[in-house]
Amino acid sequence: MLAAGERELQRIVLDMHDGPVQDIFAALSQLQLLERTLTGRPAARKQVRQIVKALERALSEIRSFIGAFRPPGFERRQLGPIIEGLMVQHEALTAQKIELSMCADVGDCALATKIAIYRILQEALANGFRHSGATHQRVAIARNGAPITLIVSDDGKGFDPAAVLAREADVGVEGGHFGLRGIQDRVEMLGGTFSIDSAPGRGSALTVTLPAE
Amino acid sequence: MTASRTIRVLLADDHAIVLQGLKALVDGERDMTVVGATTDGAKVVELVDQFSPDVVLLDLELSGIRGTDVIAGLRQRATSPKVLVLTAYNDGESIRAVLDAGADGLALKTESPQQTIAAIRQVCAGQLVFPQAARRWLEERRGSGGGGDLTAREREVWALIADGLPNHAIAKRLGLTANTVKFHVQHLFSKLGVRNRTEAAIRYARR
Image 1 (cartoon, chains in turn purple, red):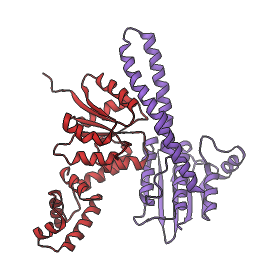
Image 2: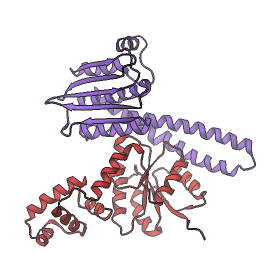
Image 3: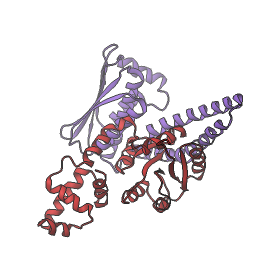
Image 4: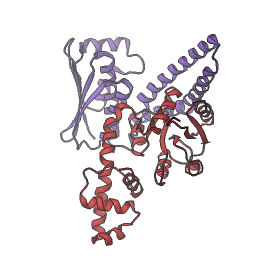
């Protein structure tokens, strides 16, 4: 089921890439040229500038969407490179630093586990970026035998985990995010364990353990 | 007379509408000119031979041929232009693929075309233009490109691969068995992070 969802995402991202991205980029190129020819016509120039700004905002949203949803070649690539790629992607999109500590022999794991680790890590980092106020986050991936343990932590402002889980159950999570509850659901589906250590003013640490196969 | 001169740009993109827009924009800059443009990735090397551009602006998702293969083809030439990859994909895997292919920079179609213009100037001036976040990979590439952790024997094998010698000829030259050379080649490829002899030779030329 997870893999089917990822394939669907791949298709949507490809459609965005082949359609709107090319057209908007081309339109912006022409508009920026047009803007230069409008010297002596400040009103027209201002109008063009406004159109340029609107299209740049649209592109920026698409950039975030593609960055967040494009599946990173789960079937072709091993866990380690996929996680490294996600760290670079998060830093590039948010300018928030990540300290990654991952054992060298993390190897590979079942497809469902790999997808779950990637999406959980992505969601945890996005949460940490949006809510913690921390300048950087730490990610640790360890593998002692079969299970894989993932810890995402920060020294930010912290939160009350029970309250957040209860709120998500009531009102859901906005903007394509699946939240803490979504992380918990994914972990349970694969028979793993999930814990959050946080309180207001104390930073936070999410620990997830998943069976590798 | 100033030191500045016109930057000659070759455009290769699958999408005619993008080519048209970029051509107009590049030609509108005082210090650059479009010397050629194609939607056919297989023609890029030929056009480079014909027009000797300073910078090739290359879409990675070309039809018929992979953008990374085009870069490999360009890197085999005695004088290779700078290659700036233009792509909509800013995920970690894509950034890594562009770096590994040996491009000089990455510009995004999901950013303003003005940034692409700025990146053309930067790669032409010899800068590597990648997101700051990819710095650790860049450092890896610099490290492996110089072959910092290679043994003396691996360096010898590397130089002979770069000369185009097959394993049996390298074995003869170094007084080794073919199996031993194969062993060194495997280690060399692994340390350099390359997949084949062509990539190893390109890396040798750029070390």
